[in-house]
Length: 216
Image 1 (tube, rainbow, N blue to C red):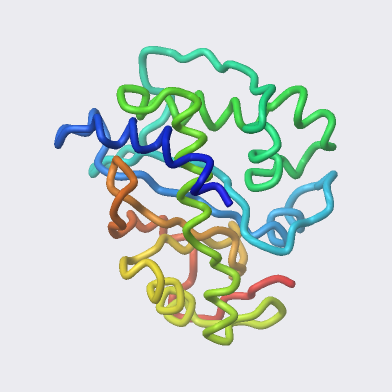
Image 2 (image 1 turned 30 degrees about the vertical axis):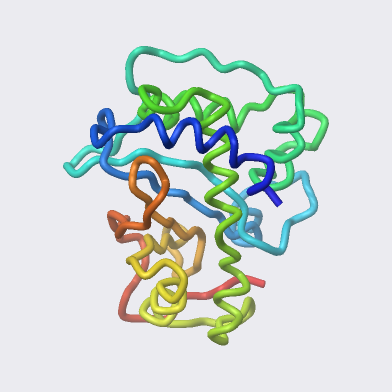
């Protein structure tokens, strides 16, 4: 899939990294469950039946989440194959496809808010390429199904975490819909150069004592 397309670019970037990783300690790949997203939002696209990318978020130990780091970046609109890859795996659900490809609003927002905080290492192309590459490493829906966690039923927080950890070996960040015990997103965390998995900061949005609904 993406591995053959992105290997050369990512190798050059990752090879050049030293043990100093700018101003962040880890990267969180945030994957959204579209049925839950579209239940809470008005979606204009056919709802995908697998996890899609929400963002790639640099993180650093401390009370504050990293966002809108300086210097301010400029977003360069995509017009090449990257555009099709993003539309498939980082789909902008709230607008129709034509508007999504033209305005690129969600990708621009994510890059300026979060991509700005890893700009010392990743430019725009390598930031989005890395997100696609990391997403390609996991099929979370398949992983959950293997462990008998399927859309349409409810499961404990521990059951979901344990299933995801069979492929990550590290604690993911399970995110639930605000005000409801419903699976919304799963975060998987990596070292700054994306070559190893690490435990995630916990967003604490799920009830760990009750059941969590996995919307069909």
